[in-house]
Amino acid sequence: MKNNIEEKSKNKKKKKSSLLWLLSVSFIAVGLLLFCQFYFGDTISDKTTFYKNTYVNGVDISGLTKEEANNLLTTKFIENKNNINLTLTDGNKNWTLKGEDFEVIGNFENSLDNIINYGREGNIFQKRKIENQIKKDGLMLTVSYKNLIGGIDEKINEIADEIENSNNDSKINFDPNSEKMFSIIEGNDKKIINRQKLEEKINFAIENRDFSTIEIPFEEIIPNKTLEDLLSSITLRSSFTTDYSKSTQNRKENIKLALSKFNGMIVEPGEKISFNSITGPRTKENGYKNAYVIINGSYTSGVGGGVCQASTTLYNALIRADIDILQVNHHSLPASYVPLSFDAMVSEGYADLVFQNTLDTPIYVKCICTNTDVTVEIYGQPFNDEISIQTKTELLKVIPHKGDTIITDTTGEYSNHVLYKGEYYRLKYPQEGYESKGYIQYVKNGEVIKEKEIRHDHYPAQNGIIVEGSNELGEGMTLPPTNVKYISPQKVTKTTLENAKKKYNIQ
Image (cartoon, rainbow, N blue to C red; front, side, top):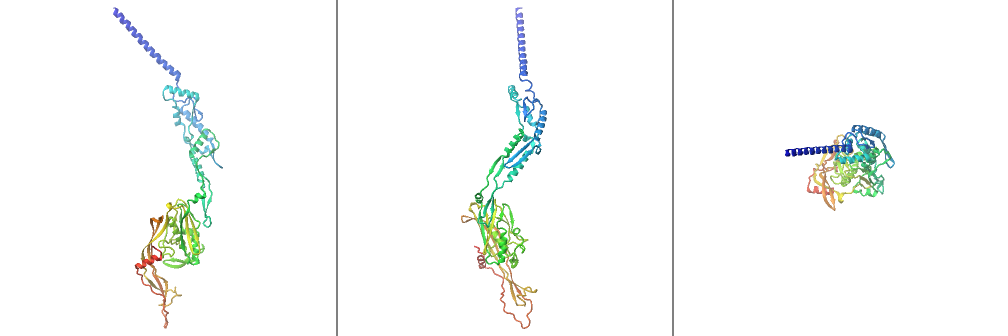
């Protein structure tokens, strides 16, 4: 009996303790819930509206939803864009940027996603700290207008192109006939816009609606070169002279006239020059005179005779200056004033001398004509490593001529020389031909370090021509002895080759 009473008493105590424990836990839970509700409120869990005191680009979006904030900000942004009136200046020149120059290419939606989540991540104590700070100081955020406005980059590029392309570098003035051939044409300092800084200034002005004048920032200002700087990159690259002391005055005048077209010429990098285009048609109207020219292996009188010596002199100066030759032709007869494979025949319509400046800087051409010889000088950037260029001719073989051919003057073309059979007039001597190669050699410290073949020419052998009269002698007529001697076909020997080398000064 006693034991039953004690057991019931224990059970009552256990039930009482359990109830007290349950009531305590419930009270704590309710207390915590009330505390959190009271202390943190709904703003922490509410991710549909923005905190109070939240500003984007100066616009209050407190309590708005993301959609409402985006609409409000976009409206304000368009209003502000239309009010843009910026002046950019570079010294005395100004450029104006207005809102109408730009277009809207974006909105605030992506940026608002990040803003609305700001401070709503982390534990409740971190969230409360951020929220209290926002309530106290406000949340001031800025979305870059560069992400919203289209056309700023294009406008900056236009201004940059105008400024940078208008930079005038100092240039060389070339007067070959002056004692001081080179002088300077002053330019201005070269400016390169710092586009990043300019974009930042424009963006700041738009965001803050500060439309005062903006000085264009430059990342580099390169001073113009002085005459000494420019002249340090110019030297005499080559010079070549040919003799025309035995030429007629008309021939000399033609050579001088042709070369005068090149005297003072400045050839820019990459530029191509045609001899025929520069000298123009060889006509009397253009100042050219009658002189001997080579046509089909014979010398004959023609307007512009001698111009080939001008082109040949220029050609040899060019190859010694290491200038690229795009087109060159040899004569049917070797020229007496240059070695084999170094003549440059020109003729309107089918033979030209064409060259191109492949250097990094311009070349300058000076032509000097005296009463005995002509010289062409090429000026330009110095050769690397003190290299110079010389030429070499290789005579491969002598092509034998076939002697004389006798023709009868049936038309009376040569009646002032011959009339009757047995009368002879030499129209042309036979001449041997040649096969030759031309080389340029790169020389350093007196030694050839490189050799390059540039020509392989065949000068055809020429038959001699003797004209005989066509009329029969009358009864009792006799002819005086002729001084025209028939020449037989040539036989080439070792001596023939050696004589040819001596004739054309070939080593």
